Image (cartoon, rainbow, N blue to C red):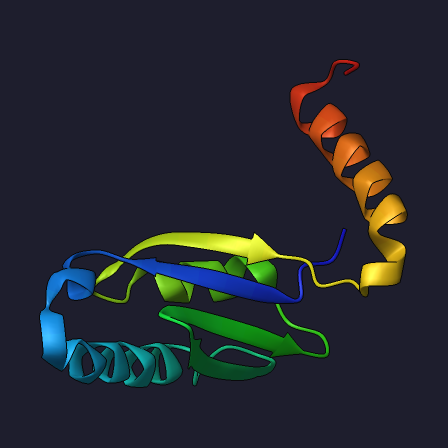
Length: 107
C-alpha cells in the first residue's frame, strides 16, 4: 500500500485562539524547511484546521517521516492513502489485508 499524503497532528497550537493561524502558518513553513533535503516533491498545506503533506511521485517514506519527526510542534504523523470514492470496496479489502499483515492473524 503506497501512502500518498501525511496528516500532521500538532499539539498546543490548536488552543491558541484567534491567532491560531499564525502558529499554523509557522508550522507549515517549518515542515517545508525540514523536507527540503528529502528526495521527492512535497506540497504542504492547511485545510479545515488540519495540516497535510502531499507526496507527488516517488519519495523515501522513512526519510520523510524521520524529517517530519524533527519538527517542533508535531505530535503525530499519520500516513494517508487517497482513493476515488468509486473504489471504496477495494480500499476496504486493502485495509483488512494490511491490518492482517501487521497483526499476523486473520480478522
